[in-house]
Length: 481
Image 1: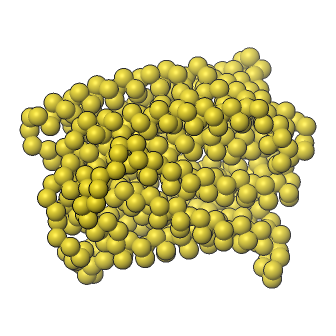
Image 2: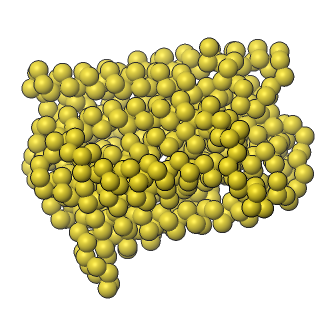
Image 3: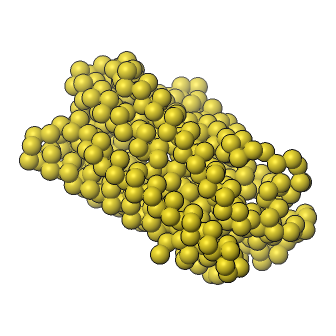
């Protein structure tokens, strides 16, 4: 294996990092990881919001078509999420144990396997985009735009997966600022590229809605290249550089990553399938409802950002604590992350509730689109604190290597929501408000279940530390029974 530039410190080095600098407080460690993730997620969401706004200038059918294909893309990405989640957790645990060579090996192999597994999936999706879009039962003009957009994005999914893997590995090392900075640059480039490719300005071809797909791909390609350069040079004493033989696929590493990652990927896959089903349910209500659904989804994604940011921070810090064999530190980090996620998501929910109508009017002046979208935003805004809890508690469990319980709890809850929503639309003449309103019933239940499970897992984790010697990647067996 290629040298990473320094020897491995003793176990527990994560407490002070490779340079043995003064140890920050638990709250500072949480915020140092969370705020760049929130910033990065905000930039990614704004990329979608800006793209949606530009596409909205074309037509309502363009919004609906792009929204439908994006939902399919999320589904594909979820299928490859095993590598992202598994590598992030294992890199964090290896780094926490002070095993820098192992952390580098895991990061390198995760990138290799992301390319191997995503290429055939991209090819299959490219040739089946027509039948896939047809499953939504959308109108002809919406289907045409959706197929054109999906053909571009599905063929470039490899770039996005590499970007996800690189960012996840760096966050596992405690570096969330580099992915944020790279994303910021990519989004800046995306605004100009997408605008030019949609409307044909600055010498660029006017491609209409599909120009949004090309602009996003090119900007993400730039981000992926920059992230790989950073990882090659090294962060926190870990580098993916090495000889050619270090880049040969290793089945043993794939097995370790997938053992943790597959349940997490299946969770994301089933969750994306549920939201895809939700899109199909809303599509049966008409193009206006589908357009308002797409806009509302983008707007509400902003209020999810604190929850996602603190959840990723919890995953990294709990994972590092597992490697360092410090249960109390992991539990404290998860508690701090949960409290702040609840506060921030409640604030974001309140803002989206009271400003729902002016926000919707930024995207569309169609009265039907605005009416449906406002009601949907206001209903879901009320569920934000509960989602904050389930996001962070799920992230904390993943950091321990337990990805099976979040799979059962979250997918069970989301599919129960979709079934109830389908019944409301088909048997009680429910509109988009009732579809989203079901979350007010299911999200509190999911939050309580996950909170109780993590509390129990912490107790089991402490018992394990006092008993058998810890092995990286083995924690799931102890806490997921």
